[in-house]
Image (cartoon, rainbow, N blue to C red; front, side, top):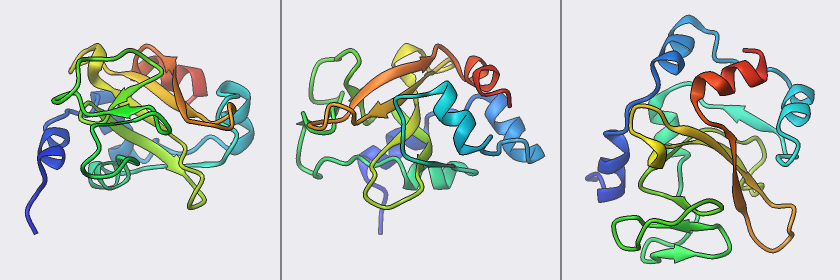
Length: 152
């Protein structure tokens, strides 16, 4: 089975060096559900931190169908086909999830959003509180700021 265009695009996205160092040293560990809820209150469902680029690629969706160019329910679009959109939308070609739902069907996660720069992606997270669709919020302007926010 060959790689899709989306897989190829995302494989080229570099992980932040701090994340690489944390994975290699064993410091990329979930700080606990209470810490996550206190620091990122709009994500109420428990998450799992993904510990390899392969697992990040595997868990990075998209949630919309393979022929869809956009999905209002999931606030996703394909940047190669649709002009750039701001949050609460994510470009599935420029997003790599680093944490995903612990329970199947929750469809929540935290992602690197490379639209702010290939060398300095911001951190975004999905919010289902509206009850109608998922919208994305910035959690931190960089991965290093995210590490500080969670006390990792």
